[in-house]
Length: 176
Image (cartoon, rainbow, N blue to C red; front, side):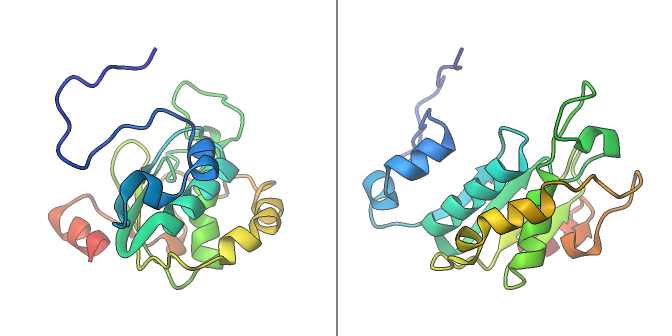
């Protein structure tokens, strides 16, 4: 059951209750937001790599170049929590592969990962709404990263994710 909106939304804010794949397939940004590009997108949901990657592709196309996209559940606390199929009560799925895909295939993006409990926040800046690099190679990227198992021990992360602490200095670095 969907939670009701309990307080009035600020001007220009809206809640869209539909799967993101349908949102990006059925609507144009201008239809929903007018001429203003999106400044902040938070991606959280299915715990599946290809869904998070598709959400990033759609969100970036709708974003301002100065905007920010935040991905949730990309920093597993242990390899067992990073499996595609749920095996534990706490589970992030294989969304971590989306952050890896961005780091590998879009070096133009500025990626910082904040060590926020329980599974990190990946902050992506320097967006390019006109880029089609990920969209045009999505099937190849999914084939490349899809079979991977999470290779890092507890408390270690890939250097490409630029992990920063959840402190004022770390947040400043992530949002810089």
